[in-house]
Image (cartoon, rainbow, N blue to C red):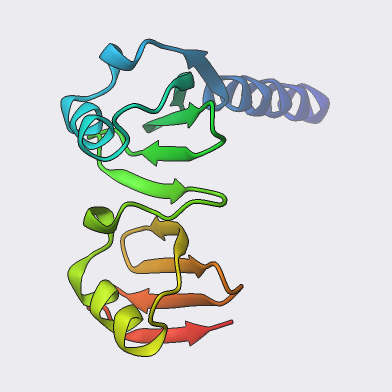
Length: 144
């Protein structure tokens, strides 16, 4: 009996993992309208190499990779969660104003290469190798 329960738990866990890792290529037009607008306003002229929808067990997200290597990730509502521009700068209009002001005062002229956000934090990676973490109120909480 105990063996049957263990096997059943393993099968359920395997099925959940399979469902939670379901990525599929999509057309840019299948993205939420908010994401399409972000791409149109901030990455006009960039060619999309891959657009994909990532379906998890309880959530959905989207990822766009441009032929230049730049990448943007969006949540299920089409709001960006990560912008990784590799060698070029993250578009200035996507950087929250309070973060931009802090960077201008403390790291003038330094490009933002990557910007990530979640419910509680923003993480900024600069071209000089410094990573700065801000809380949701835009106060600096860590510098690496």
